[in-house]
Image (cartoon, rainbow, N blue to C red; front, side, top):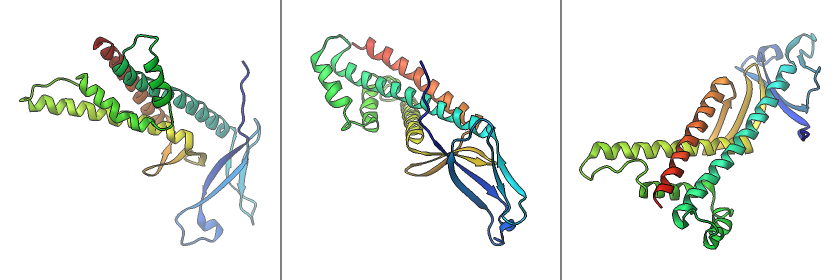
Amino acid sequence: MRAIDLLTHETYSIKLDPKLFGYTDADELTVTFTVKKLSEMAKIEVKHPVTGEVLSELDTKVKEDLAQVRSNAGNIISTTIVIEQKISDIISSYLFGTLRPNPRRDFFENEILCSSRFSSAAKIPVLLKILDELKFFGDPPANNDKRKKDAKKKAKDFEDLLRKVLEYRNAFAHGELKYESPTGCILSYHSRDHKKCVLDDKFWDKLENRYNHLLEIFNKILEASRKSE
């Protein structure tokens, strides 16, 4: 199967010394530009308009980094779709069981769960209520405050993790990706307020760990929901 590449332009920004251009009161000068995708041998140079001195340049490593980010973004979006499907499966299985065929379950999934009227964010409170009914995070006695507190903390940690993963998907689907010299690949997006992430190895390690941990929890939830039938 052949690969396709529909992207024709990429965005870059380069931080320069503002004093070289006469901006004595500025702390920072950033030049942002959008150009056609770099060829294998191409590079971008920023030269002083008077002296011709090369102040900064971007080489082919930039293209490789951006290509890897786009590949990672596709993986993130695809995996998040799988997670969203698991949420729907848990909700529909809790209400209608897992046996197929089930016309009522099919109708519920097709016309409600998978419709634009029932967003992923809207499903989270429903999922949490189901997990509470299943006693997934524990079934503490009414007089045991410590165990009740622990159960609430586990539920809150799970909710925070799930919302963060959904935020990653939205960020890569709707955010702005650019290469910022000398920092590296940058993703800017809005989630309640403006956010900016440096896409370095530390970021990818944290993201990967969160996804793997969440998928492990969902496998346990699906197992617990089947046992409850």
